[in-house]
Amino acid sequence: MSISFHPETSSYLSTLPGRYYYDPALYEQELERIFSEMWVCVGRAEAFLATGSYQVVSVGRESVIVVRDREGMLRAFLNVCRHRGSRLCTQASGQLKGSIQCKYHAWTYGLDGRLIGAPNILSDEQFDRTAFGLIPVALEVWEGLIWLNLADNPAPIEAQINGPVIERFGSFEPFTRYTLSELRVGKTISYDIQANWKLVVENFEECYHCGPMHPELCRLLPGFRSGKTYVAGDAAVLAEDVEAFTITGKASRPPLHGLLPEDLRHYYGIVLRPNILLNLLDDHVVIHTLWPTGPTSCRVTCDWLFDPQAMALPDFDPMDAVEVFDIVNKQDWEVCELAQMGMSSKAYKSGGIYVPAERHIREFADFVLDRLGHTQSRE
Image (cartoon, rainbow, N blue to C red; front, side):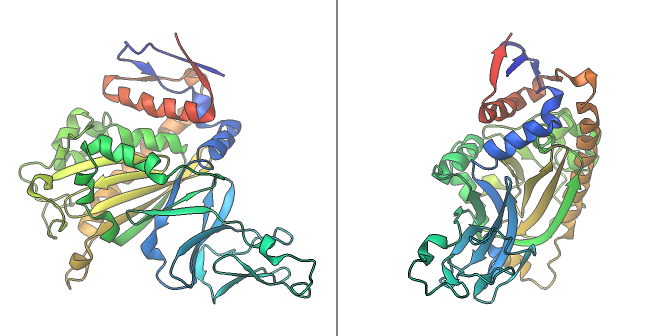
């Protein structure tokens, strides 16, 4: 497949053709070659406090159980019984009583995935129980975030994740000052969006739309009003009369304890492909976790994270921070859904263009094409 777009010397590069945002066959390729071969974030490690606490998540086309075992380790397994292929855990989350049991024939697995019970055959000398444990899925915890990889031999997670952080800050050290792994969730909201997941990523990567669409955001971060995109160490700065990124503009929490004076009053946005949108502020962090749910739909789970010391105070209330980004989110989802409506039109058959302020998004389009193995012709 060949994709045509403007030469690199042009300030106006083409988007992906419209079919990349609705074609079921292309969506299936993305599930296979992006979400089944890369590290995919599935949530926060803090959600699994007790032995046996679990969640069921979808990665690519697979259902995966993430569980805390008896040794305190997080583990992940394909949610499939090795006997006759039955789905094991059917609830989105819960608490296991020391094992995972199949409802169909009562095959039972330890929290470490070993087969520990199989009625009438476990003592059969011809049956090798070690060959029928649950199929493990690679799991890593990075800065408090759980990442899974379905590949047989996945590359180290740092090879995928650290690059965007270093590119954004110039080195990894400034990012560590946000102590992401120490923060805790103060509020979670999930949004179902009738738009292809790539439209959400592209929307996050530019602020050309911020002036017309986000008056509340531009009031707090006036640099976005011009459509400027902040990259490679450059940060958006709060307005002079604004104390914090809250709906009132007033500060109700101290800065995160690891930050330096030069970090204060700044906002950094980072995309960790394929499915994390990071928003770093001086008194909280907002994480958007993106879940494709179909060729023309996706879900975003938004977590607002705070310093646990601030959360322990009797007057802690996250809603002044939550309210402003909830407004911005809903504004974004509206325009992403409007964009989705045009993807199947013949007017968008060959795609549109990125204006100079959006030119950097073409790199994301190229990432998608490269992962899918689609060739590109520069005409």
